[in-house]
Length: 536
Ligand code: NA7
Image 1 (cartoon, helix red, strand yellow):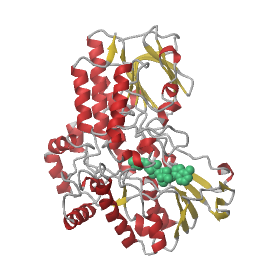
Image 2 (cartoon, helix red, strand yellow; image 1 turned 90 degrees about the horizontal axis):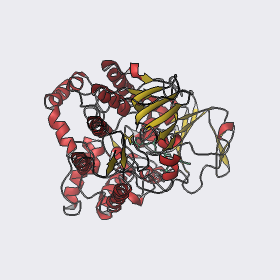
Image 3 (cartoon, helix red, strand yellow; image 1 turned 30 degrees about the vertical axis):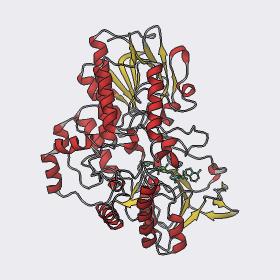
Image 4 (cartoon, rainbow, N blue to C red; image 1 turned 180 degrees about the vertical axis):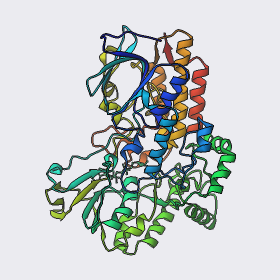
């Protein structure tokens, strides 16, 4: 394929890929393998996406390392050695760098190059893309590999800029080590990033104050070094593990008890929860098949965790504040290493800001209920403008110059989470409307990358220059995503899945629930000659 360039300095590519995280890297590799000219633009100085930016103390994947890894290359999955059950951020970043080197990806990646805009040129059926550094390129296809949790959410606390000490966002952590020894540290937020970093910061800081708006459920990770024989056993039958994972709703091969929590006795229920608690990790959500379908069933699991919190945390008032009242797993379950135990330390205090929010930030510290708590460091563990944030930061314009952020003003609208009507030749990897954040991201990314690559190869083979989701297909898909979510307990809490963490963001459940049926649909769409798309 080739296309027009309107200036001798502009380059034309078959595909421009935005982002060099796990999605962008594999997309580049896959397209190159098919003989396409692809170029990646990445705003960071290195590969790794999420794992490049989230360097806060304790950052660790909540999916086990043997599963949170690529499977497209058997040599890679056989040769790479993970050191722990759950890999920490530095190891995952080393893995990302290894992949970049192993497949010689860097020569087609421009680092330090954010994308500012992408506009569809209807005359030439191509995307005109400009970088934040002022470069202009064009591409037949534009593939957004911008990540689901990549646009940091920094609440507009009055006076934040006046704070005299250091201020860090967990999702934009500096590249250098931050030493909290002897310092008074305040952390705002109690999501996964806070749950992971609080125990480590507490060990260093003179005093750590946690500002909590909503308590979260956390289950123990029981992280440990990965024994070579365990790793070998998985590698001997890696295909089996991957195959089992593909059949699971979350794309993770954990066992799900195919029974309702309400059809077993109290003792059986307790035994199952105890066993899952002892095993550790996200598989706690799979204790029974109806935990996210039936409130009564969910209450039994929630109450089990609440009891655990009350048993771990010595001070009853603190334990009470840390005890969530909402549906378990409605927000993503946190996987912790010593989180609740940390509140037994004398140098840690918890401030409830559910009724009286942070009033303002002053040069000395944080003001709540008229009282200033002084700090040397403030950490914003306030999460992300999830799923749509990174896309909306780019000025993306489709047919007739319509901005994507305008089309999505009332919530994202996609077909399969891969494409949006009015934006031909634009693909989103793990976009809203796909299982993405509800799954193990690596296999989900691979499935999307392979689907997109096959689609682009199909267009080339049939001398087609343009593919666009049709409006009826998109409308039906949006309805389906909503319908499935409405049949679950997911819409009952203020999660980032719903955009509820960002003031003013429309409340729409964004991910598609159910990896296996989703993959089946994508395969059927492709096999049917890309049904629901207009090809020309
Ligand atoms: P999360 O899970 O979105 O957590 C953000 C936390 O910050 C959460 O406790 C929020 O409270 C809190 N928050 C957000 N805005 C404010 C304001 N304005 N005031 C006080 N507190 C606030 O982000 P994480 O980075 O921890 O984790 C994101 C995902 O990464 C996680 O789910 C894993 O998949 C990995 P809220 O609950 O909204 O009341």
